[in-house]
Image (cartoon, rainbow, N blue to C red; front, side, top):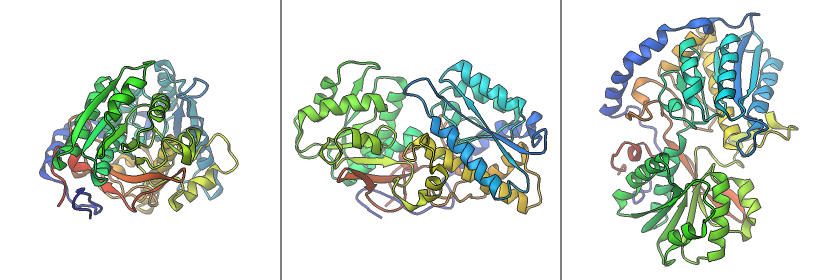
Length: 424
């Protein structure tokens, strides 16, 4: 443990009393959800197990064709090895078109097909698709986490911690790096306001000052934001980029022109990834030496060997894409849960799948995350994100133009998300 940074790498078996209180507060909703099986309790009209994965394609920068392509590849691999609990796994995919209408059409297709779960997927329209999944009793496993309902619906089982864990983790990474002032460049939105609160929770115990630099969406001026963030470029100054991928590229252009010599740059995986490092100059670009916080180990880690094998030969699947990685994790959860049900002699239905996930039994994702479970005492005691259970992050750094692990293992930032104190 790094005591100065307050980093914890041990899994604590029981959560604080607040988690239990939140769990009981959620009990009516959970019981109501378990009572509604709907048509999804069928395993599929032809005896196959049907699941669905959706993502946008053909829309522009939001496109994630690798998400559905990976789902199809996993389905082929599972069936080549004998199927799921002796039955064929039928993977349905849907183009969500990055629109409310597209998301609504996809969820309607999932309900009509009597899928046992929606797996992985990438959509910002949780307000549109989660109510329909809840009505049909269909669990949503491992969505990317772009919308609030993915972290609040009793039928959602997120495998990653969303942006809150990344921003809190980035704060702790910079505390460990010796930063005394951290400027966060973030969207001037309500969601951006929330990020600032989580970052403050990570920085305040160490006495690190926070400077809030807001950027209006679709702004054409990033030079001003970069200048405010860098300030007088003194020792101990640090900057966190918490913008979207397109905005990040514009900010990096302005940051590079300033050529700061003492300011330390940091970002989160999702805002940057290896392709961004490459496109901005690699080891000669502004990101070389930058810190990065992620949900998962770096792409170069051996834990991704299975993903690389599944993606082999398919140019649509970018294995460094967080949405692709999250979909991979989501399918590992499905396969593990199905195996548990099969070993217990229980049929694989939407209802039984929810019951397995709600049981509190931990599921192994092959080292990509700590073991995951959605038992009541593991939920985050938060009205905003009670379904957030994976509060662990990884610390990475760009060295020689490559994203590499800065330290081994995972760091738990649950305390920062709940207003607590760092572990001693």
